[in-house]
Length: 440
Length: 133
Image 1 (cartoon, chains in turn cyan, red):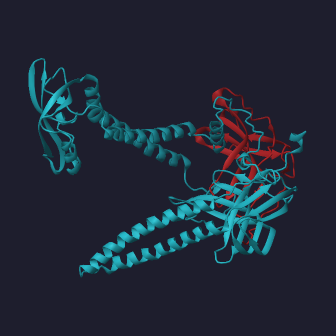
Image 2 (cartoon, chains in turn red, green):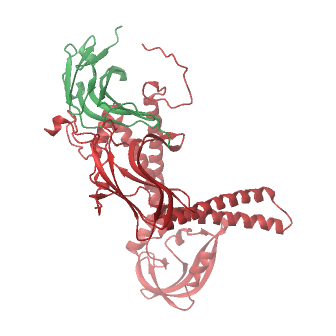
Image 3 (cartoon, chains in turn green, blue):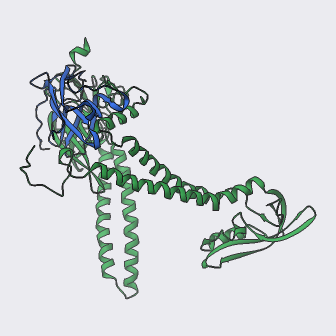
């Protein structure tokens, strides 16, 4: 038996043999919760079907079309809630020689429903019906004094159906997953998930084995663009144009919120009843807005002056211990204080902290490949450099799983006169050397 | 009362392998009678440790279950053999670590389990250290 020599920590993540909770109790709790969600979904679905969907469906299926004349129109008020209204139209129509004059609107009308908050939308509906004019209407052949002016499903019916269906899908699928994985080991659950992701559900559950490069990202997404000087042009990780557009959108949203708070705050001052707390709050938003504007302007300057950065490579994916030709091109119109290109490796870990998902990054490798100082880049004469990259024989290969990653990239950084420093990243994948036994 | 146990032993004493190497091992079950064993699983897998949530992938998996009519003989050592894949290699990073292990899990009556595992290295990637920007 192992003795625990360290202090037991309550408020940190405990995994594997440090876990203190019972997985069975946790699974039971989850089952109860999601089963409840499933049952609520079923009850809700039955209610929506019974009270909303079926009446409309009966109308569509059974009611017959005829023509009516509108005699009057009014705004009906819910007897139980004065703020809820519905349109009420008086129509006159004939069925088999018998004349009928009734108040109606849609399928919910005759069961005393169809009220909605406010009155503006209902008034707009009333305005569509002109007294004395003819309109199509649909009557019930079994009860001819029941007719309606709106035929077909209301959009709210579909929205109402969507909610219980989502409850049923989420609750049912989770209960099903717990049922399938109940009493199974971590390894067996992992195998089930792997098989499901590879659509090999009907393979026998013995001798499971895989021969590819598991957990190494596919290289094809980086080799679909041909280069001009070398074989491949590497895609940029985050386009500076997108960064500019997103920062512009953030600036607009922040400015709109700031304007709203400022307007309310100024009104309190104008009315000689100043709300200083609101004024302070609006002031803090003004600072955020200024910061957003500064970042947005910075992105505009970088985008307009720095131009395109192009990186091409002789071969991809990369392998440890091998050497590769690289080509760097920097366009634009700028006087560069310095520009450099490096090979960088980062570890990226994603973890849950409470209800938040956080990402941590740690750089574990940095190799300067090129540095030039005091370079002038003109419109028709971009900076062009040919260089070589040696991948260390001990380099860790690229690795990507759901929560953890080893990420390699070529990083181009530069600083030019009259503009902030810029940085552009170009991901590359390093593969482990193929094993000798597999190669032969 | 003697608790049922399982012991796992890898044939390569150094526990260092290269991608494509053959991993062979042996397990012994220490139980009073064979009816105590409901099922047994042998797996070779990698998992991550470090700051991120755990990722786990199984490379080799073998299961014998009494409920499925499999015969589990506790009195003879069992062997397993698998060819290791090209990746991922074992890695001792700063916030991401990748560990390989072989694991034997014994399922006993009343939901009890007995587990033994042997950690081994695949490849020879040196320890990583944080680098300042």
